[in-house]
Length: 345
Image (cartoon, rainbow, N blue to C red; front, top):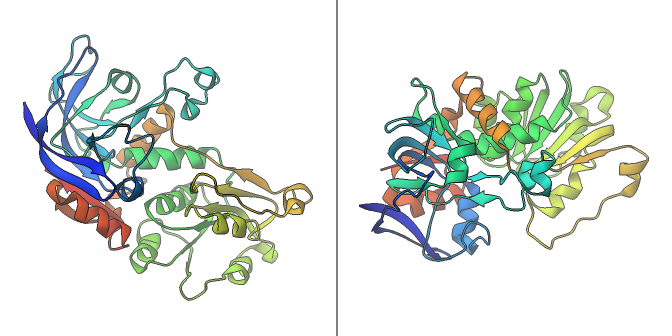
């Protein structure tokens, strides 16, 4: 069977072309893609490749999606053709050092799935077993496609000490930062959102319901403003970095109170380093948290947050485009012209 799919060949070289659909091996399923989303990781991959996602070329592309089961491989249980499903982009092995200790996001054999920008995608056995979930009949495919990015944020929030009444600052309000702000609000925090893009600043109010919004174009050094929004001017209870730049990582330590928490959620380029005032960490007891990826537990939690309506992810969709225009969509995402773009076949 043939299908149309976006394929990665080299940095800045992706092509929408006809390819064969991979027949499902034992334990695998073919899903007809109903909705896919642009993602910052896909933007980075388009620009410079990715050692984990792109292991050979040409390769499938895209990883946030939902759809309907089109075909089952032998031995698949619990699913049937036409089931409405969402799949994570990975699954832990369950057997390595980290999996045995419940740290599945650090799995040494983490299997990663790519290829959502296509008419069909074949889901490997491990993901079928651990991270393929049926979605409610009343939940749209476009909302369900947000499960993977929201699962990352749910994991981050789950490991961050946020109490009702805490003041939480989010620096960087792309899709991840906006979802972090929303989940912090759901935990009862006062949320300060900080960014530069007018589209995202508006979403910080409409989607995340942030209490205070700071335009970093107007206030490139907002430390004094931020401290002024905290009890007794002592600093944030929790400061979350969702940019992924070493220089921003360093600045976060000046925003928190003694005993506060800095969450370095944005991943920086490999090999980069930061300079941190050791006094702040030791004598001021500033806690440092940094959370990577998601686990099956948080993937399911993300679906519940979306299906319950507590996180109205549809507000993050700026535009809908046909799959064949994926490269243009990713360029718009990179240029800040969209928060998320929905791709449909």
